[in-house]
Image (cartoon, rainbow, N blue to C red; front, side, top):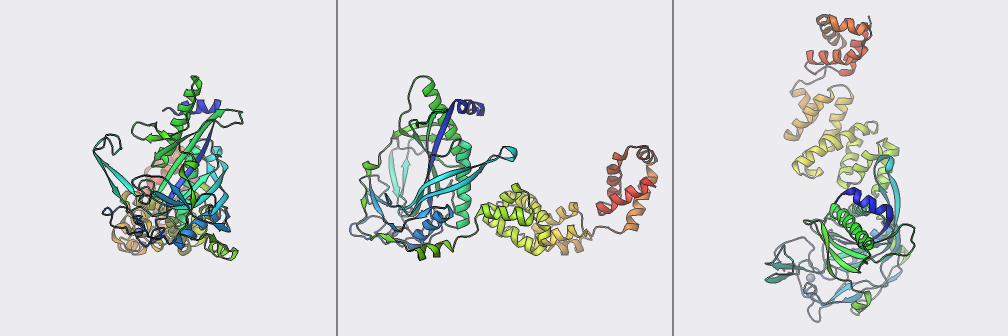
Length: 500
Ligand SMILES: [Zn+2]
């Protein structure tokens, strides 16, 4: 769908979007109410027990680490933490849910009334929008259905269905935003920013591909200037940030077309088909009262003390936004570079270790290497930064060698390529390959004189006013010295001799 189609619609209509984001607490050792391990995939029905299979008489025991992780997420998002809270049973039948109810939270969620400031757009068009967070609650995930036969694993037309309960009972947090989001891009940036925060908290691997982070959206439109909300549709099955953006863009245009042609939007759940790039009706939306919520009778309510909440707050790590601001104010990084590093926990850990080794005054070149050659190397090999063969100490030494004028930037790239393969320290590579850059002024002056002697016409042109030729002379001298000359010294000597 054309981008300008959406822009045209958004001139006449305002979109109102709220997100519901489910995140599995994949970093925990055990499930929500039993001791079964939490992991992705595996042989079906091998990580199960009477509790997560919903056997009669089996009793749930809440996972304290999951409760703490949920409160940690709430504190990171400026939520109010409930002093009194409890689990409810959400009753519905679906074959992937062995108990025929899900243990979830209803009117007493752990966290309410938070917010997240999201930066949208780049450069001059960038702005910050504050998205309210209605609630964050804790629940258990369902199992997984595998539909055999039929089209694309869809239920319709399947020959039979299998169920895998490995995922059943995995701790899951559900975050619901206020309907404060106005464009598909704001929705995408919210989800991306939230992901960087959850990664920094270390509570989940937040993989949209593997389903450990799942984003659903409620979207409606209303004529610009109207105060009443339009009828909303819920969109599901978006398993990438791009899918989230594209599905919302499609849905906004679809609703506008309906209203423009005199039709009306129906409240329903719609399924995003990434292949066909469209949404289609899945089912009419259930209301909360359809679930017959009632308090979970097998568990006592929670009473959090201020002391306990403060002990969780003390575990909050530095969050990406604060880290980015620190890189800008303390280390002088450009905002965009600071964000690219700060958003990635592992990359920022690497960066900070390298800056510590190289010295804070060299933070900028370290950042350039991290975002340049190092990131290219990570992309090319698919390796994680802490097992890519390059240590912070190696990168720091390389930056110092360049900064001290021992090797040129061009030589440094050769050294980087070599150290990735051999694992040697850059200094050792420079020695072994005799790569030391020549800064000796006498040697450089001899080479400059040779170049000037061989090119009298260019020398005359320069002296007649074509001073732009200086770069050409520097290039000739660098070639004469096989790239080993210190460019700053060459530049200075070329200018000096040409002015004589
Ligand atoms: Zn279990």
